[in-house]
Image (cartoon, rainbow, N blue to C red):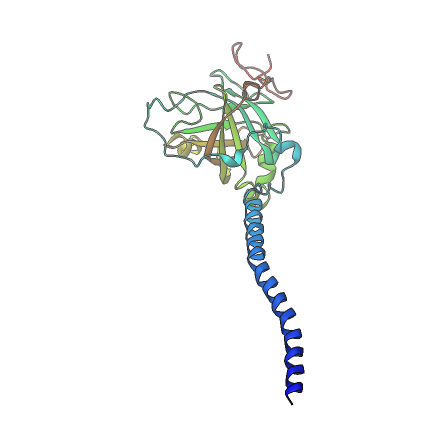
Length: 268
């Protein structure tokens, strides 16, 4: 009997000891496994956080890279506008408009006081009785252009699809003469605006930095207008080359005859 118990005890030890050693190794591996898992989760989280925001469905690589290499996703949140006359405010005129998701890239000029007809290949700043027609000030910057290819036609085309909802959230970049890029987010698309002075009331009364874009919805001067409203996101530095496009506009082929010798935008 004693011999039997001795044999059983020996067999038990021969079985238990390897299992105990294996369990000890597994327990020693658990902290390393947990640590490794934690590192993976942190890395995975950073990888997800650093991914750029998905481009708009209409965006193309060419349009998206047309504005340089600055990282727009690092823009600061918009702040409250400084008081009128503050030294922090600049009064540098707009020089270029870019809407990457729509492939739009236009020089911007101030509308001449003796204009008979808008120029082609540019967007023009409509004076709204401000001391300075400049982005970044607590007021609206109002741009208009023909609804033609190479100008504001993409705005009109997209406005006809589900009332332009695809444009909401798109970014509009407005460069200024002091080599700055003011970035706005489209927040509103207004269709069927009557061709009347009251159409400018909201923009004229704005007391915060805003960007308004206007395109005609028809071929006549009396046609209703499309208005696209954008609010500021932030401001980043730009190169002099990016902020100063070469084009200054041209007389449109279909422009009417000038009403007087000193008029602009029309055909002599």
